[in-house]
Each structure stands twice: as C-alpha cells, then as structure tokens.
Amino acid sequence: MSTPTPIPHRTQVAIIGAGPSGLLLGQLLHKAGIDNVVLEARSAEYVLGRIRAGVLEQVCVDLLDEAGVGERMHREGLVHGGIELAFAGARHRIDLQTLTGGKTVMVYGQTEVTRDLMDARAASGAPIVYEAADVQLHDFDSATPRVSYTHDGVRHELACDFIAGCDGFHGVCRASIPKERIQNFERVYPFGWLGILADVPPVADELIYSNHARGFALCSMRSKSRVRHYVQCSLQDKVEDWSDARFWDELKSRLDPEAAEHMVTGPSIEKSIAPLRSFVAEPMRFGQLFLAGDAAHIVPPTGAKGLNLAAADVRYLSRAFMEFYADKRTAGIDDYSRKALRRVWKAERFSWYLTSLLHKFPAGAGDTGEFGHRMQTAELDYLVHSTAAMTSLAENYVGLPFEE
Image (tube, one colour):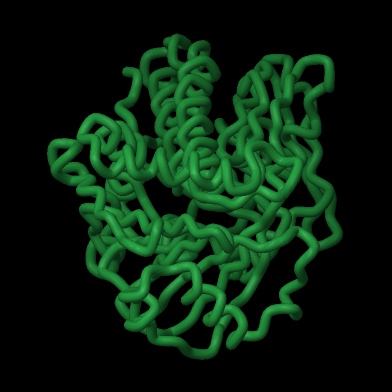
C-alpha cells in the first residue's frame, strides 16, 4: 500500500499505530469529519502478517459497522451463540445467546479486520504513513502537542490537538510518559500458548475450551475451512520443538474422545508461541495524550478480550473527540481514563478467572498438583450446572454493557 500524499504538517488528532485500534479510531473520526493522521512504525505488510485473535464482541461488530467496514465481516464471519467447556472427558455447552437475552459473538480474524480497515483508509484518502521511524512525542502536556518522525530519510513534524497512543505494548507512547506519572500493574503467567493455523475444517461448530491434566487446549477457527488451535506449553519450549505431528497428538490427548476422534489434521501454515500476561497502566490520559488498546493494557487471550477491549477504548475515545469538536465540551475527554479503566479491570478479572480455571500451573505457581486440579474440576462442575454461574460467564464473554 502506498502512502497517500501530501502528508499535512498539522492535524486535529495524531494517531500512533496502525493496528486495529488506531485504524478503527481513524476511520470513525474521518467519518465524523475530524482530521487525523496515522503513523505506523512498521510496513503495511508486517502489520497484516500479525496473527491475532478472532472472536469479536457485539461492541466490536457494531463499531466496525459504524465505521463502514462491516460488509465482508457479515458475509464471511461466523456468528456463534455458545462455547463449549471440556473437562473430565466430556464437553458442556454454555448457551451464550439464551443466557444473555440474544447476544452472540462473531468469529472473524483480527487480520481480516485490519485488512478491511486498511482498505477503507486507502479508499478514503485519509493520510497514513507506514515505516515512520524514530517517532517522538513532544509537549503533550501543553495545548500544542507535536509528533516528529522520519520517513524516507526525511525528518517531519506533525502539530495536532490530541495524540492517540494506539501503538501497542512496546510502543513509544506509553514509554514517553515520565515513570513517576504512571502506575503499572502486571502478572506474568508461567506458561505460554503454542498456536497453529491450518486449512482443515473445525472439529466443532463452536469454540472448545479444555481443562486437562496435561494442560489447557483451545480449538478455535477462522472460517469453515481454517482453524486456529492452541495447547498450553512451557515458556522454555521453542517452535522448532513442536512438529505438526506432535502438536496434533498433544491436542487430541487434551480433548474429549468424540472431539479427538473427529478432528481433521493437516500441515500448519503458521506456528508460534505466545507468552501470557495481565498488564494495566494507569491512568490512560496524560494531558493531550490518550492511551488505547495494548498500549494501556494486555489480557491473557483466554477470555477473548484483547481486541474487544481495544475497541471499547476506541468507542469511548472517538465519542469524546466527537463531542469536543462538535460542541466544545470536554466531559468525555476528561472522563475517558476513568470509564475506560473501569471496563479494563472487569475484562482483566474475567480473563484472569478463565486463565486460572483452565490451565495447569507448574509447581510453585499458585494452586498446584492434584489438589489444584480437583479444585478446578469442582469449579467447572459447579459452573456448568448452575444457571447463575453460566449467566455470569456468558455476560462477560459476550461483553458487558457500556457506561454512558
């Protein structure tokens, strides 16, 4: 994708990061008539090559529709009304749709969301700069913030009203904030997820989350012909330690007999190991700089909250900017951090709960051994036989209501 030209020297909102949160914010602001420039350190091809989650809450679906990029998602995405929990050799379905009064989730890969947003950005002609090197933030505590960057060997400066930090966990935005002004909360989990993509049919119509004595497993999908499966693994493991055959054998061993028997295997087209962590940075606003998405928080993927939480940030932030430019009111801007963090911590709680419930923890890391596994089994047994407990899980999985 080529960079639209010319790039202005001033804009209303400078958006750092062209992942889903930055592109979605940019598209919503563009449709509202708010000028914005997106700066991305990597190439467009690199951004599209990142393999991420694929379960969208209704909030994310609604925002993509609002941004005008939902057509392909509705055509190709898979609407799911439930999930399955596997433990003690059997599977139990959680009927999300019935328990939440009709709410569902959409299975549609984050890569596809990013592609749709990139295409919309290109079609709109709104400015975006890929491979923007050495991005630096200036004067974001003042009324005249600036962003400088290098592109094609030339140094540029972009003046703006606001900076939206959508550049991920390792990005420059959070790193630019003085340490004494930000508080970080973190838990690093003592295991990772080995994930593969393969062009085979899903083993079931809905996602299967499995608690097993050998470790956690997840059977997910991207379409009716492409799967995304995971097994819990050691942080010392390397991708080359895991042949395709070893992965499929291990996955089957952690599923119920019916799922294992009906699983179709095939060569992987992508394989990677991801560590798990919970992380929150507080606050999420620093003068004219606002953090959103992974720049402010990370959740374990167990609860399918990462992309959805980023979309929730974008929802709050886009409306705050729209309110400011339409009515010169600052209530949404001033309350952004509090409202966003209230939702963030609830998502962190849910993701921590599912991670603790479904994984095998090594010795010395929380409840371990047979006692810990029996406690997990007892909790799961209670969960699948209690309407109240299932409703709580379902409400969190499909997405909690917003604070308006």
